[in-house]
Amino acid sequence: QSLGTIRDTQNLFASLVESIAPLFPVDIIGFLLYDEEKRALEGKIPFRGLPPHFVEIYRAAVPENSPAHELINGRQPVITQAAAVDDTWRVIGLSDIAVAASLRDNALIPLISSGRMLGYLQVGHHVGGARQFLEDELRLMNIVASQAAAIIENVLLVQQARVRAQRADALRRIASLSGSSATLNEILKYSVQELARLFHADTGAIFLMDDARGELRLSRESMYGIPEDVGASFIQIFIDDPNYRYTVSGAQKPFLSGRLSTDRHVMPAYRPLATLLRMESAVVVPLVVRDRSIGELMLASSEADHFNPDDLQVVSTAAGQLATAVESAGLLAQTDESLRRRVEQLSAVTRVGRELGSSLDIDHLLQVIHAEGLRAIHADCASILLFEQGAAAGSDRRILQTVGCEGGHVLTALEKGVLQKGELQIIDDFAQTRSATPHEGVRSAILAPITFQSSTIGLISIHSTQPGFFGQQAVEIVQTLSIQAGIALSNAHRYQDEKQRSEVMRRRSDTLVRLADVSYNLGFDQPLEQSLGMIARGIRDSGSFRVVLISVVEPETGLLRRVTGVGIPQETLNEILSRKQPL
Image (cartoon, rainbow, N blue to C red; front, side):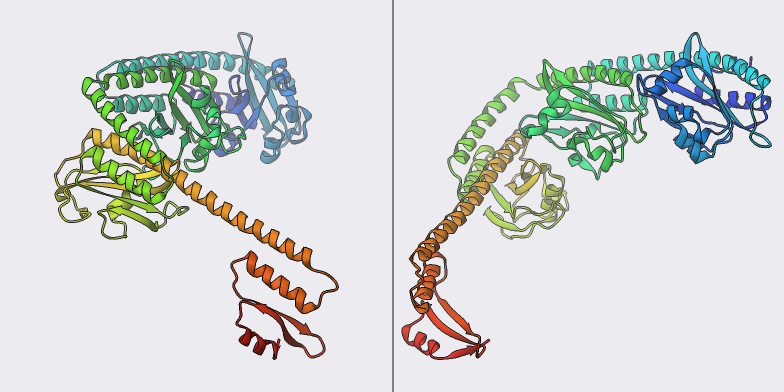
């Protein structure tokens, strides 16, 4: 009667174990519940006779149509005197647990209610030593299991109804927020928080498609449980990556995993969830509008098998509402003024693209980037820095080339901060900050890293003598300019590398041809001096060497005798040939 009033699983099993304990002279009493969604048999805390940390791993997977699945559906008691070596316990998948806990005489009594198999009541380890279970004990266990099963089923039904109500309320609040006058950042932030709390997730975030950069970028406002030092680079997904079509956005299919650390099907793009954030479970769903992916919604937990297919369905519903909100925010931003700015920006981008596409000379490209940046924004001056390729993200970058007004070749603290974050930054007024001005007379500036995929290859810094000079239009133009510059400079670097490799291959080919000619002209009847002279001339003609001297070792004396040479004045050569050199 007292147990019939319980409606919370948190106290249910504690009360059940406490009520059952006086009925049996044993040391171990607890419940193993069968989760049909997870296909697993799991121990529930508290478990009399077993410590809580052990109960957390007291579980067994029950794949569909497996021997364990058939045994559980058989709904028969499992009685044993030595659980560690019992064949039935091995079939269920509990033999390793039994060995670790040194389980001996135990009984697993089925929990059946309304024809549904809920799990087992486990009773074991008689006080005073192992012995057979008596008929009266087994009959009492069946009675207790029958009553406990009805109570557990009622509590689970109440809990399921409560969860469904909570999920419906959460989806209603997200839908209401998406249709409100809140900003897009506010919608994303509070929606992720709502979902994270609903599913008890440790982390959550939304990634939005940046068409200009060709990548999915983390919305910082939506981050939940993600440290700031991890930043936006812990997951990077580029559209031009050949593996993009296998991602959640590319395939437009959700992703669910309960074992990220061991799941071999996890894409490399999502591996940082397990490595950096130490998450074990994750659910990622696409944000899709009119069959077009515009982002991803991610929730993760440090617990294994934390999410189930029902959770995935609810998250997918919320993702659909958020996708509509993202699209609506984009449409509302397209006012007449923004369209005019877009036309100007596209015109500037067209000029830049045409100029950058007409040359692969790095010096010319830097001049074009500098000139077009000033022209498009009408700023007073600018500087472009190009860094050495292959430098690590956290190391000091060596400046290879500079164009513009920059006087020194040492990165300032402001520039290092922009490169470290990988994001554009605006200084409205240097007089109101502690940052040093690039040079005398500069009041405001806009700085943007030049990147290609995940590599930072340069920095654009545009200056003005007026405070607050750079607005949203300048931000969009500089962002587009930095992307175009990154592509052009990367192409130029690849072209230069290919050109150098081609030159090296050409030289190797010429060398081989000339050495082959020398080998062809050599004859066995020729004097040694003549043969070595031909080889010396072949080495000189096929390579960058101008002086070649060939000597032979005389075994009798151990001295080095000069035989022939090229590129040496004849008088000097005669003197060298007349003397022998010790080794």
